[in-house]
Image (cartoon, rainbow, N blue to C red; front, side, top):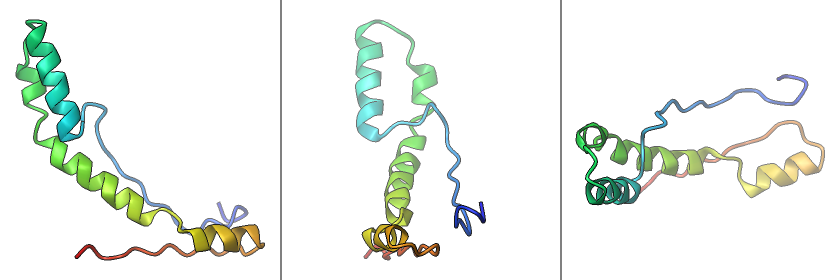
Length: 86
């Protein structure tokens, strides 16, 4: 990682079953219309809010355009700016 100029990483753990609220609602309606048991899906509804929050957080910590420009110019140090949510 040092050779690539990477000083640190951020890793988000999640579940393949997590969905946004809209995705969850759509899947629920599809399963209900097909007469499928929705009990297991209903147990994952609590993950929807976390899924959406993590998407927002991931967007905030990705490299900004300035970091991309510095990298292109040959700078090995990348800076990531996280703006607090008001």
